[in-house]
Image (cartoon, rainbow, N blue to C red):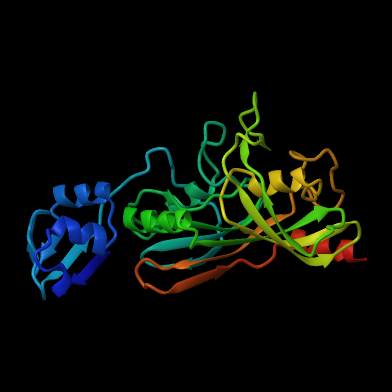
Amino acid sequence: MNLKYVIDESSTGKKMKHVLKYNLGLSERLIKKLKYDNKITCNNIPVFVNHTVSAGDVIEVFIEFVEESEDVIPENIPIDILYEDDSIIAINKQPNIVVHPTSSHLSGTIANAVMYHLQQKGLHLKIRPVSRLDRDTSGIILFAKNQFIQESLIRQMSDKTFYKEYIGVVTGIMKNQAGTIDLPIERKPGSIMLRQTSPSGSPSVTHYEVLEFLDDATYLKFHLETGRTHQIRVHCQAIRHPLVGDTLYSDIPSPYINRQALHSQRVSFIHPILKKQFELYAPLPKDISTLLEILKK
């Protein structure tokens, strides 16, 4: 992949590094990598980052590196690809599968499957997750195909211009049609996995909207401002409406679903290359659809 930029009058006299950082949005770390690999040109001639540019100069940056994720072994695991181009790959994740290898899950993850998929296409790229989901949460997860794309999308998350929408079913009937849960979250003392709300935690904001009232349950749409670990699950527990089937944050198992009823349904962001609003949607999985049908009766 290459980025192209034509210098205008306002950038005349600037150093190449300034253009790369402020006009193209490249990070210091990526600029350094490009510099050492001679992947920056001005009018088709390789230049250094201290090169002075003039109006009309055509700048090109070649973001092509042979990379490996040494901790990710390619495995032929079926994945549901929602969308793929030279920049991103979006997966509709099924429940009961981990996204990225950990000390307790070295294989059998989405990352292992994505690595296999990429290598089958002749691509040797580092696995760069942009978003993650809990093992038993289904829906959209996004991977970037290079450092520039990953940094651009993560920056959008920090700027709160990356929209993440979930749907879920919680126990009990919500009192309000819509609302916001603004409760800081931190790791629960003595636990590696569990989180809890606490005044000393990191700021965490979840917006919700009722989609339908069910039989002693409520079907909700969630929009996240922040992306803390287990955020929706912890916030729902905190307001005494835990997710149906969430045995980690509730002691009430569901006879109708064997995991938390939570699905990452939609994401929206500015595509770093296309420079336009981009939206991805993952259809409702069968187990949650069945749960909704049962609870409507």
